[in-house]
Structure formats: structure tokens, C-alpha cells
Image 1 (cartoon, rainbow, N blue to C red):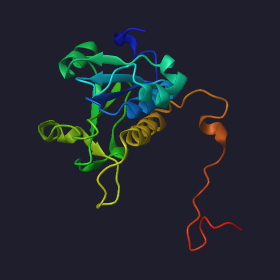
Image 2: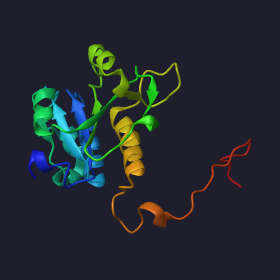
Image 3: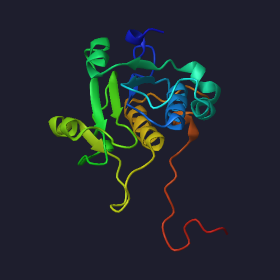
Length: 187
């Protein structure tokens, strides 16, 4: 599959990792993209090689089902897909990820595990910056966890669940969570 057709033939969503440093995260996100039919883009310098054992271990054999597109910078990514919509994900953003207006051809852009996205980018594109809520005294979620939460919200909004006999509406009615002092206690 070519980079230009990556989104057209898949879920309509793309995950962009800017200068990722932890191969296990990239492997897990590669596996996520393979399982959801989403494109994976890697931007800038990587903190590992594609032969890294941790990348292979976390991605398992699923990495054969996703072709990461590695580009040097955002300009190169933009040139591949000029009509893209995008959202930046950051702990420093004000808007909740459930407010992202997902459309086909939408990119979810995540920064490096250590530094996140540059403050200047978040300030310039503040209307495109979103976060996954968490307790105020916590630093951040794991990158792969955050990517999973936001990508599945995009799939939910677009009605693009991966096709599988047990996926989507066939799962049955939504079960409301039990709330109260005995919630989660074994009977």
C-alpha cells in the first residue's frame, strides 16, 4: 500500500507519532492500527530501529498488517495528504477528546513520550488540541493507552468498527455500570 492511499483503504483515521522514543509503545500502537484498519505515521527521528526486539515483542505478528509511513517532518506528511483534518493530543490541552469532530481522513497527532508536542504548536493550533481527562495530580497516561482511547472514540463516532462477528452492535445492549457501595464486589 502506498502512503497516499493508506487512509483511503482503511478506517479513515490515522495515528501520527512525533519522534517516539519507546519501541514498545510504537509496537503496541502498530498493533492497535493493524486491528482497527488505521494508518500509522511516524514523524522525525525515532528513538529505536525497526529491528528493535521490544518493538517486535509488543507488536507481535500484527505489524505485518500495518505499514508505518516514516516521514521527516510535518511538511512531508502534509504533502502526502493535503486535505487532512487533524487533532493534537496533549495533557496541556483544554478540550476533551470526546469533542473532536472526527471525519474520514482525520489524523490523531501525539508527541514524544518524554516531551509531548511543542508548546508553540499547541498554542498556534489550540482549537485542534485535545486531552484525555485524568486526575489532576497525575502526569500522563501511557502513549499507547491514550492512542487507544482516542482512536476508538473516533471509530465510534464514524461508525467504523472493525468488521468481525463479535464487533459493533452485535454485542447486544449497553449495560449500565453498577454504582454504589457494593459495586464490583463478588456475590
